[in-house]
Length: 105
Image (tube, rainbow, N blue to C red; front, side, top):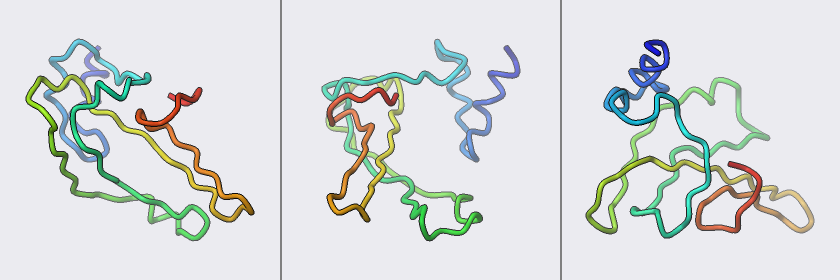
């Protein structure tokens, strides 16, 4: 259990040790209904997988969220979008809670 709790001390360079007192020792991967999202969203990282260099995966970033109402925050929700822009009919695969559900969690 100590090993799992130590995970939260350095989550990719972010001290999230406050999570060690939560109900879950591990991150939860699940879907979230759009009406449960209580803040705006922001892009943490945008990668150009076709043209980037391997060392560009190492990153740090500053982000902020604006809460839409006052309540307890129970989780941070992360998702990814993958844009296939070089197709004759471009397609975006998204796991956003504001979009139609997919099998991706």
